[in-house]
Length: 531
Image 1 (tube, one colour):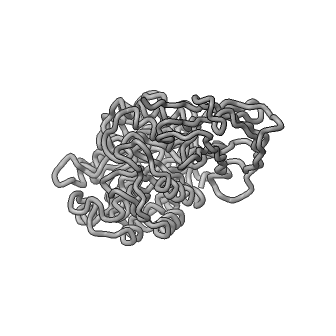
Image 2: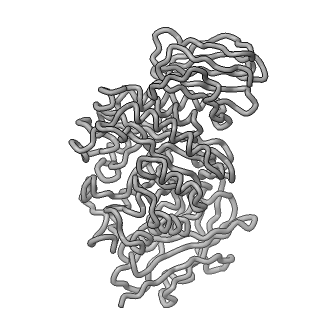
Image 3: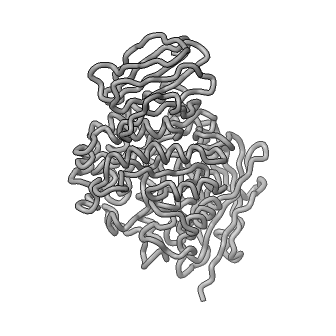
């Protein structure tokens, strides 16, 4: 019977024998270890974990991974400048290459201009409704789905895609591991696993995967890795899923990534089990779950202590056949409102709504951007956009999903809707969006048509409020809750155009008419000296 060995890395004090390296804060550091023993399957027979100790008593334990032949690696990003130490322990004490290896890392402050490395890894404080950088700066999540790109995009294509998304002010890219719906190998011919099932991963595939994640990080984009509990097929046994998840989390522990065991699945015990394994291997990284369409799984996961924030999929409008714009509109508002009201307070992100596609443009072209404003102004800490040709890079699902369509990756890249996401990012990036709280009750005369549902949010202090008119000629608002008269300002979500308004008294109800010629509109109410 094959033995399974567990390696644990313990804290080490400085010794003359310890190796010494250097690294800037919040950049990837890794250390290669060479196994002194041979195993039939190093991926399954031996696991590596690491514990670090740094300045001011900082310490934590994490994981390691097999990287081919006799090579194992440990990776980290150090949050604090100063002297850090590490030490390994192997469940096979005879393996002198892996057992009780130790070292010192002299960490210096990061000096570059990458916003991720300047501000530090993402975090969520207790009862906080938004995600922030390590230094406390609020993180505005504007995401894009490129599910199939790790497998089907060449590195040159990936670079072009990431540069475009950076220029359009996206902050997040969502990808999967190696789902078989996109194919069986990457563009270089590497299969994700070398044997049937999850018995032994292929280091060549995951090095290329790593390379794409690192490039996105270099351009300032956080990467969300979905589907660790089901890297190829649904659903493997728990032991295999946990083993894979630990090693992938350890491989990416030096990157700005967020992990989701689930990938568009219902709530299940396997997702919880794998989340625990990820936390063990990468304790400082954020974890969520990407549920299938609906509010049920999101509600189930909301209270899980291992998860840092709640993922929601309001969906493409699958509640009707064909998927309708009315259903996608209704769920974007109603399910967002439901999750926002759950206790304890926790950030939530709308990870998937209506994708842009030929199908969407035949129904309601503005729907992808509308879903963004509906969800954020209903309490979400961010929104993820999607577009045909990009989420299904390589043409997978063509003819099976109306959101796939005939576009290739380049056509998807250049759809006007992605520029509308830039305007969304610029708008919320220009205000204290994290202080806004939903207040739809201040809007009078809501239309019954869900595609025309208006939303509104304001700060507790009443110094700032935003209302979204999806295609309404005007909005009537109760002004009594505002402590002072307010100055109005308009922004066009489709073009980014701005228009100054007028001062409005904080009494009674006021009607605000959308600027002439606009399709949808954002109305800003601000205390005069705020803007």
